[in-house]
Structures are given as structure tokens and as C-alpha cells.
Image (cartoon, rainbow, N blue to C red):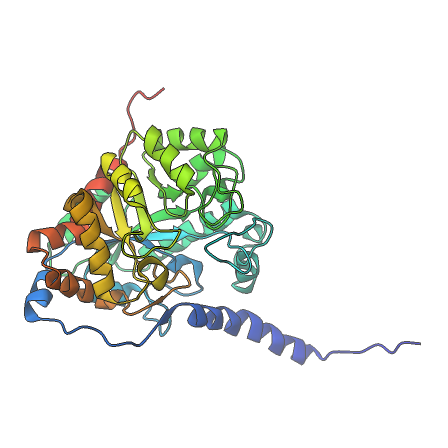
Amino acid sequence: MRKKIWIPATLIAVAAVGFFGFAPGYVEGSMNQIDGKPLIAVSDEAKALHNTLNIVDLHSDTLMWNRDLNDSASRGHMDLPRLQDGNVALQLFSSVTKTPKNQNYDGNGADSDNITLLTIAQLQPVKAWSSLAERSLYHAQKRDAAVDASDNAIKAVDTAGQLDALLAARQKEKRPVGAMLTIEGLQNLEGKASNLDRLYDAGFRMAGLTHFFDNELAGSMHGLKKGGLTPFGRDIVKRMEVKGMIIDIAHLSHSGVAEVLAMATRPVVSSHGGVQATCKVNRNLTDDEVRGVAKTGGIIGIGYWDGALCDTSPRAAAKAMKHVRDLVGIEHVALGSDYDGATTVRFDTSQLVQVTQALLDEGFTAAEIRAAMGENALRVIRAGLVPKVNAQ
């Protein structure tokens, strides 16, 4: 007869505390790192210019992690104090709802998910454990709670009017940081167009169609089939343009990118990544794709991690931005850090003056730096937030 083994309640409690209390922070700390390599010397000229900029970062994944945005953190790349130190005017916060196990740039199926365990370990609402839409709605609630608790240091940006009010407020002594919501892969629609309305109502104003796997809308650059848009995907693109939701082609398959660019009637964004001309990685944009984004009036956000730059140096970021400028014009250059997105970088958001210095060193004028660091993004976002009138 098999003996029953009794596990003391105290041991169970200790294990639970370890799992729910320690594990999420440990995972984040191990995935979002600074590589510790030397930074570049920053001149007084760069510091003075940087302090006058309206900086916009098109992509971070900070809401995925179990910490308060208002609090200074010892891990990760971003929080309110570091955003303030970096003089960021507007940060776009992405909702990540699903990532495949053994994630890679070349080929991932949609039959596994790392985020479910993270959702449970963080003690998120139970309905988020099994619903991707609910995970995004929870992320929206986190953004709103951070805004409410910030004493006006963080301001939600859901409309063009709120964006203008943010910039006006930043003319005063205490500069608030804007927070706008975006989505990393519309698998969170769960195949239902009605969920787009729910997400819009929660504050989401930009979305990428895919993340690291093919979904109901399109093929991913990292999926198995890497196909183009599905009929559902084309329908959602049209609905997004009508509503005033900006379309993000980051992670979308090359055939999907071509289809979006062909049908777009509003500026398209590539929120975070690089260009193949300076880093030949399959997730980066070809020159033809850069030209296509520019033709829509859109922008390309350059990231800071190795997969985007084949390096982590601010000089590598500046060289990628220079390539976009030289190919299609300065008005299409932007920042897209992918901070807190399981990336290793050279500098966190408090040290963004590193990019300003690197651009000066590449020969960018002050006006060009002002455009690349934020004014281009502000132009595209302001226009993209306005719903179409009398759309059919």
C-alpha cells in the first residue's frame, strides 16, 4: 500500500510566495538588461539640445512586467523617473499578449505561449489567464492606474487634443510624460472584429497586425508560413483607419507589409526595428519597404538592441537613422526602442542623450535631430488619431 506524503502548509506557503513574489521580477531582470559596454562622451552642446527636444519613443513593453510605472526600479529599462531623466515627452506602451516558446526570428508556431504562466505568476485577473483580449484590457487598466497615481506626472494620450494639451503642459517647469497605448499583434482580437471596438474604447490607438507567429489577420515575419493578409486582416486594416488607430507593420511578413502599404490611405508606422542596409536581419526593413512607408507619409522607429542594429551602440542607431534620412528624407525617421521587450541594450531611457550625441557626430543638424527624436512621430500620431468623418 502506497503511503501518503503530507506536505506542510508552511512549505506550500513559502513556495507560493517564492513563485508569485520572486519569480516575475527575476524573469524580468534576466531578460531586460544593460550590456555594460562603454557609452560615448556627451558634449555640453548635446545636453543643451537634448533638453529642448520633444522626444517620442514608439515602442516599449513595460506594461508586461509586474511593477508600478511611477516607481523607480532597479531592473528593466524604463519607469517614470527614467523617462523624466531622459526628457521623454511621449511614450507608447505596448500590450504583449502571447509569445511562443523557444522564440526566434526565423520560424515560430502559434501553438505555445510564454505569457500565460507570466500572467498567472503576476496574479493578474483570472479572466486574463485564458483570454488575450482581457490581457490587453488589463494592460490598459495598468496605464490608467499609473496616470491616476502620478499626480499629473503622467498624462494619458488617446486623442489629438490630449496630445496638444500634453505639449502645452510641457512648456511649464514640471514636464509631464505622455502615455499612449499600442498593441503588439492583433491576435488579441481572438478572431472577432468587435474586440477592436473594445480595445479602442480602452484607449489603444496603434496596433501591429502580428507578433512572432502567424495569426488570423496575417503572416508574421517570424511565422511558419509568412503569408500575406487574410480577408479578416484586410477588414481590420480598413476598420483601424476609419477609427483613428495607427497601423504598425513591425513583425509583419514581407508580403503582408507590401499589402498594407498598397491599401493604406493614412500614414503607416514601423514602430521598432532596423533596416537591412545596416543590419541584415530578416525582421528589418528592406529599402523598398522603407520607401513604401515613406510614400504613405509614415515613419520608421529605429531600435537599440542587437537584432535591430547588429550592435547595441548609439552610433549604430544613428547610422541606421542616417540611412533612412538619406534614402527617403529626415521626415520619416523616428525612435522605437523596444525597451523592456526582452532586449539587451547599451543605455536605458534615462540616457537618451546618447542618441542625440551620436546624431550630432553623424552630422545631423539640430533641426534634423529635433525631427528624428520626436517631431516626426508627433506629426504622424496627431494625424493618425483623428477618426475619418462620414466613412462608409
